[in-house]
Length: 71
Image (cartoon, rainbow, N blue to C red; front, top):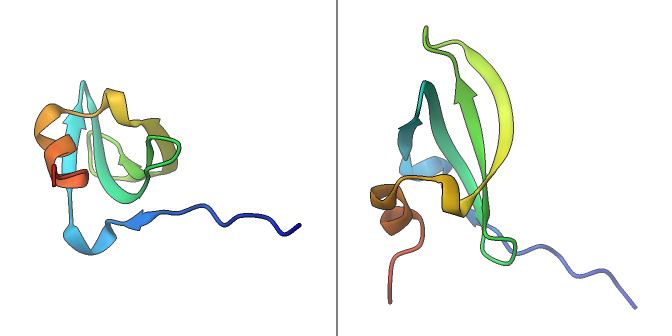
């Protein structure tokens, strides 16, 4: 049996940005099967910290509507 590819939705072209506490994020891709996002994390000064994965439940409600619109 072959491995299943993880389905992901590319978000980097939509330029979705948001803040959570003192962290600034830019959405890169969304994984609907795992309900999480890959995001680029930035410091308060605007320096790139790196790519991290955060749970969908931890993002602001307004951003959830952009990432996963109700059909």
